[in-house]
Amino acid sequence: MNCSKTEELRKYLADELSAGESRLLERHVEDCLLCQRQMMEEEDSGEEFPSLHVPSALPTDFTAQVMTALEQVKLPKPKPNWKKRSVNILKKTALAVASVTAIITFGSMVSPTFASYVNSVIQSIQGIDQGMKQAAEKGYVQEINKKVTDQGITLVVKEVVADPARMAIIANIVDQNGKRIPFDPEKDAFSLIYKTKSGEDLNPGGGGYSYGQEGEYLVVSHDIFRFLKDSKSLPDEMIVGVEASMLNGKEGSWKVEFPVDMKKARAVANYTEIGQKYTTNGIEIVLQNMMTVPSTSMMEMEINWTKEREEQIQKWKEQNGWIVKEPKTGVFTEAERMERYFIDMGVAFQIFDEKGNVVAGWDDALHEELNQIRKNNVKHSYRGKVHDDGKGVTKWNGITPLIKDQSYKLKMHSLYLYEPSKFKATIPVDTLLKDKVTVTDSDSTYTLTGFTLKTTEEEEIIGNETYFGKGALISFSAILPEGIVDTSEWSAQDESKQKYNVSRNGTYKRGKDGRVHVEGTFFIRDLEKQPKELKLSHAIQQRQYQDLNWEVPFETSNNAKR
Image (cartoon, rainbow, N blue to C red; front, side, top):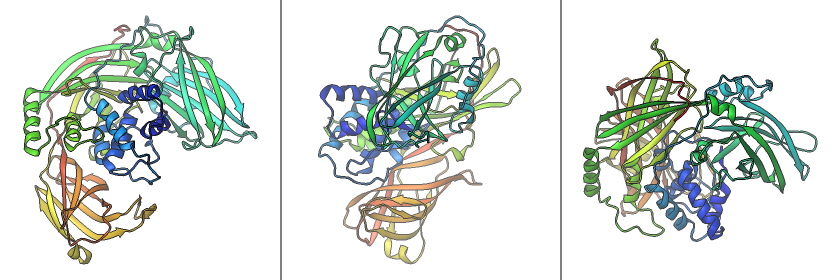
């Protein structure tokens, strides 16, 4: 999937937008975790401005992903001030984003009726999550079948599934012979508009949606509660416009507008107040409420530092020189990066029905394979907001809809927190060329194998990975300390004290000893000559706290009003 603002973001970083357009884009990035993630990846990579490519899906834990995964990109000629602009916009969104609540006014309770449109294509699309498919099955899918043609290319909007939280638009692009043209983010430029029947713009900031090819169809997805939360009430009907300024690389004008009935979906939405608190390991977790609409049950959870945690973080900052001083324009300092880690607090939980069956599982872990508890999650429905004081977050976690008037129990599985790491290891490169080198430090064990220089800037496939730019590759296997599930902020230093950024890829699994085992490759960027030795270190690690003693019983209600 691609965020709809990807191209505008590229222009913003290249200083190609007007002042007004730049302000609108900045407001969009405050809410768009896809764009925040992309800019953080580019900032961390140490590379010049690339052609932006947004990953296929938003991770469950966006900050951890952006801080650990260094995107490998081709390097076109940069605009001179792109990095300064990326840092400035990130500083605006890092810790000053207000906490908001998705407030939707629902109508009275009625029984849903199946729509007359029963030949929905959504069930055949593998990339559509089960929540959207359930909404379609229950009649919340609307046939559109409108099309517009320009430049010999036709844009077809086939159907839409919508409720007060999410919307999915199913479309196609075909040539003059009716042959499907696959979606290509480099050749297709889309935008969405939302209006009331009277013409009021419901999403004046624009953007926030994602789009991509799913099987034979183009699917446009949008968490519409992000802008409907600011409306005084959800309208009975919205006018949605799908517009394209370029298709298959040809510039033109395509616009399809259609009404979307929201009244029926709004009427069956319900809201369950929970309001339970739990404190553990310096963190207070508040399970606030759950909103259920046809496509999802959305849990709202607040996670805050306690005074104990705040004091511990302050101590870490002082010990490591991570105190944020006067902000520097165009520079994202190490101290500012560390602030983002400490506010990134993840959870894992499971929901059980009355018979003790697991009906849903949520996990913010970076590596799903470690716990294997994710179940019945819905796509694109996770959103997080950092509180004004920078000491807490509000999260929305979406699962497939729970049944009304039923008793459930939420059981907390894990809490994920970041902490400083003291790991340091010195690698004799001459020895590494001949034999394996095993190093142990701070209860971590790394076995390194081989040293290879990549001497060209061009794209090159080495092993199972594609690399761009010059650098050195070292394969490794590792056993992480007990309780540690990820490591971040890797760097290397040669004997002349020249420092290098280090990215890594790898596979993660839980060993029989319960510890995390990793196999992967370090890529030491811009290292062009073989050094005598390398000092490897990482500044941050993520700890998983398990065996949490918190269970919350709740009942889904027919309360249709907040």
